[in-house]
Image (cartoon, rainbow, N blue to C red):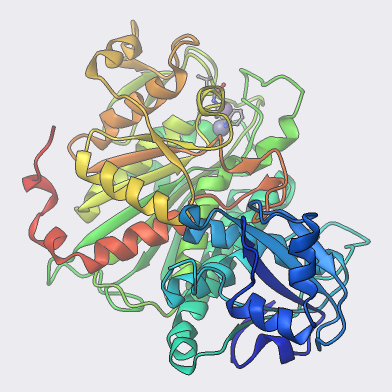
Length: 520
Ligand code: BES
Ligand code: MN
Ligand code: ZN
């Protein structure tokens, strides 16, 4: 689907459908809704008068008035004016796009909801509409013989004011780029484990890097052995599909390289858990819903979506993406409970539960990240089922001892609507992970599971400014939402992009090398 800006009167656009937003309690449509109302000789006013439609957030009506060049009019509630936000605009746009698609429309004309009376800057509103339209129209149909109604061909964001329309142009391109990155992450997480083992995920990374002007390397088993990545190797041991470490890099500016030591470079590392299928290993998972564990590489998928979304974007920092990828299987050579693993940094871990595999491979990726002397490291992982027990499906868990990083990530999340909820990391939790045989155990009981997992990772992050996002709760939506059908959501792509963009724009950060930053 393409999203394009158009200058002009929305009421005269030919399209399969035209969408407008109406605030709660609005009696007299203004702006785009006003133009549509006049052209349709009062169709919108009549709807509002009927009280069949009150403008409640996401309430939706479809009308077929004469006087428009569009075949249908989709009216979506914007809710209370003071509650309108870019994220609400995204949801409204997603709702309209999906409805238009389901009705068989191929093109949709829409205003940048919220840019007028909603008080949102035109660029932000237009970007949100572009993102929401693509995200809402998305479906995963790769394995369907009958894919159902085709996606929209085109969404036109129509703006009457010439200056605003010009300002919207680059914002729309930004929105399209990031939404496509999210869709890529969704596609990858939806792909069955059989069709996306670690090696294939590596090939996808190479393709993403090539298209996005970044570099990618895939370190195979022999290299992992040389590096001493005992955690990653252990997780992959029971599978016929060998593990690998995927390393993506883009330099300051747009593209490749700049990874030389000649000039110290600001570096940010993002790590994504890449378990292409998680059976639990010898500590086998129960059979119910195990199919869902194809999404256990959603963190890795988000990293790839991020790199893809950064195509053509200049950043004054080097970005490194690490995806430790493995298939967690039971098998004749599989890791056994009681086995002791020596991690890349030398720490020894007694594996008490082979289903707590994510922390083993993430620990090695964290150790590996040190070579870049990063100013920040963020990992995303579908790490614990318990995070959904704590937070439901509305928020991911944010774990970090770094107050600045927490504030930055929470601010980015507020903009993108990908909720984060900060969880504790009190040092006393670490005592529960002490082992009798080795330095640590990888799993201890069923209390505070998500926090213990994060505490385990913290040991390997040491003094790096580090944050961990447990996205097991949000990377898969159990319900259809306006901007995401049920299933893999691509959670984290927009959030990481927002966070990195803000960080890149903040010169203050460059003055504070990792080692010198205050630690709580
Ligand atoms: N990939 C799972 C986490 C998960 C579980 C995500 C259920 C979504 C739904 C992870 O590898 C895992 O199995 N975690 C264990 C940890 C436990 C063994 C300490 C869990 O959550 O049960
Ligand atoms: Mn597991
Ligand atoms: Zn897992």
